Length: 240
Image 1: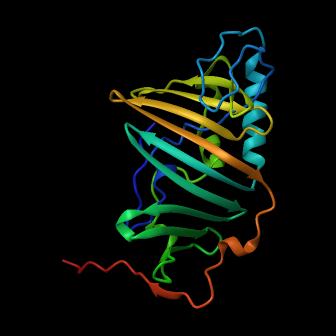
Image 2: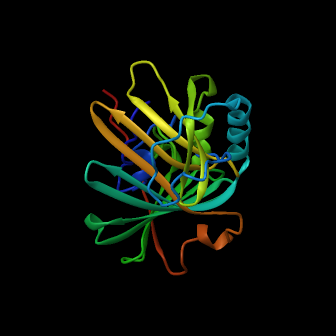
Image 3: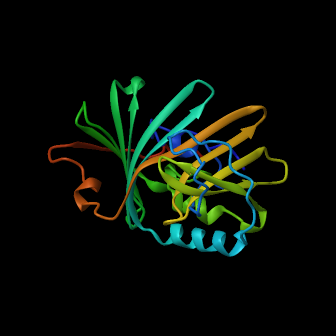
């Protein structure tokens, strides 16, 4: 699993691109009454009596089938925390992140069907429009992309846990030449709730919160009236 990078030109999909595409998910299973119910994930119990493989495949399928949702994603690397708010509906995605460098919030609106990305700065009422190919990179921008990249054959069931009142099945992921990782899969719909990665001795944690499935208005993917839009085209390099 490779670490996600920042997009160019202040396309701040920061938290969603800090983790590998393999990490994502949380699913539920019946849990012991002694399991913690606070928001901090605890050490999973070691009850492995159930046949987890069919459950895992079912959970991954549930998560992949969701095409309309909103969520907050908090990523922590060392002492640094980044919070990204995301809305997705079909081929469209919007995320928001506070950017001290830009003196306020950065909003990214991605329309995969139209092949365009808008980087909107509300404080300036300006947006930069670019071709989506200029923003593409390895990584993922949604739980569904993370789930698509997961290989059930490399996921080992290690126990049960509860995050923010939601019961989860916990899996370890093993990949060649990559650090260790762990994911929490939410049984209700297969949406990621927590993932951890240890790479080169550094621990990274990502959590999905305030998850809402469905009910996303089309207006979330539109720029406000009066927004000044600037086209950005990559300069053409002279032919030697």
